[in-house]
Structures are given as C-alpha cells and as structure tokens.
Image 1 (spheres, rainbow, N blue to C red):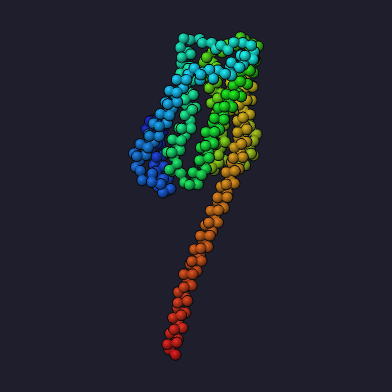
Image 2: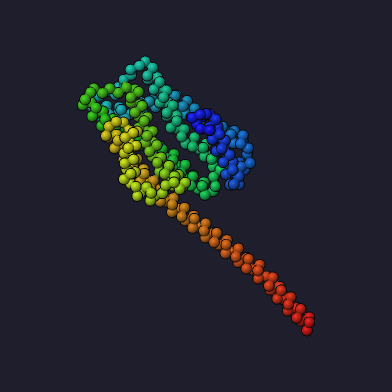
Length: 317
C-alpha cells in the first residue's frame, strides 16, 4: 500500500510497525515496558502527545496574557534600525484584521518555541525505554545539545541576522523605492530568519545521528568540502531572502555548523572505536576463560583414570 493511494491507512500501518519494533527493543533491553500490548503502547503515546499539547497550550495562554510586551520585544530590531536612520518606528497595516491575526500568529510561534524542551522531554520519556544502555549514553547529550543549539540558533538569528538584514537590505532597496514595512512583512521575515537559524544550528545533531547510524563519517565530509560548500550556498539561496547579503549571512553559519559536525563525528568515531576495542577485549577474555575451563575439564578425567590405574596396580601386587 502506497501513501498516495491511502495516506491514512498507510500512516496507521507505519505507526503500528513502529510501535511493534519499539516493544521488541524494550523486550530485548529487559525493560518492563516490553510486556505492554500494542494497544497499551498506543495509549502511552497518546498520553505523551496530550501532555506536549498541554505544555503548548499553557505557553500560548501565557503569551496571550503578555501579548503587548512580547510584540514590543520582537519589534526591537526594527525600532533600533529606524532610530539609527532617524525615522519613526511605525509598521504599516493594509487590512483591518491584519494586526489582530499577526499578533495571534506571534503568540502561536512564541508558544511553540518556548514549548520545545518540554516536547522533547515527552519524546525522550516515550523513546528511552526502547534504547539500550550504550544508546542512552549517546542519546542523552544529543537531546540536551539539540535544545541548546536550537535556542542558540534562534538567538543568533534574532540578535545578529535580523538587524544586519534590516540595515543592509532596506538601505539597498531604499535607493530604488520608498520602502514601507507592513506588519505582515516584518514579522513573517523575522519568523523565517529566526527559525531558519534554529534549524541550521541543529545540523551537528543531525550529522551526529547519521554518523551513529553509519550513513556518514568525518572522512566522507572532509574529503568533499567543495561539494559541501556549494550545497551550503545553494541551500542558503533557497531559504534566505532574495539578496546577496542574506545569502552570505545564511551560508556562512550553515557551513560553519557542518565543520563543527565534522569535529563531532570524529569524537563519536573515536568513542565507537574505543567501545569496539573494549568489546573485542571482553570477547577475547571470555574465549580464553572458556578455553581454560575446557582444558581443566578435559584434564580432570585423565587424572582420575591415572589414580584408578595406580590403585588397581597396588591391589594386584
């Protein structure tokens, strides 16, 4: 069954297979969750989804209650730019309900950003019983790093990229036309730039996961730096606003994250090599112990038979 023919049934079968594999891994790991039925796993998943949704709703309510200071804070880059050129910091609106809908959208986005750690926590609680101890040792720091890097990317986009974009793109455009920013223009651009960098800063985590899966390695990336650089520029051209400065501001951090990923991959490879060496030493020690035990068991009967032979010789004498 393909996704295009029946997407609902396909998604349902995919979910059931995933939950079945999760239950099998839990049984292999000796976890008590492995004794749960498929229906119980579905109920558990629903509970985690509901708790994640409640976290999001709670942050949305808080954001709605403090809508004015939140919107005022997000206007800071625009206000600073306008103050630097001696203009009033006024955003235009071309429709009656434009401001209302945009403020509602801002609250949704802010609530989603604030709820990220709690959603990841619920995801960890659901997935962790199916992980082996070695996988948990790697997954814990990666999960923590994904949260930190996401907020670092969001902060970098808000405090560095958006002001630089405003000061360069608007100054360039003002030479050809009288540029007037609307509420939709500004906040949509702000949200795009911020989320783009939040995702860009997740590249080391993604590359680390691919490295753990054996799909990529540090040598593969380092030997193809030209291709990686070209791909970074191409991706930056697709996701950044249509000006050369924005392209550079997106492409350079993206390539920098890939270089950081190479370092992370080398650390992971060294750790994996060390663990594999320890595992081989452990297996070799077990083999030697088994061989020694087999030799001792083989030597035992011969000594007893030799003692019996000596005894029978004495009796015959």
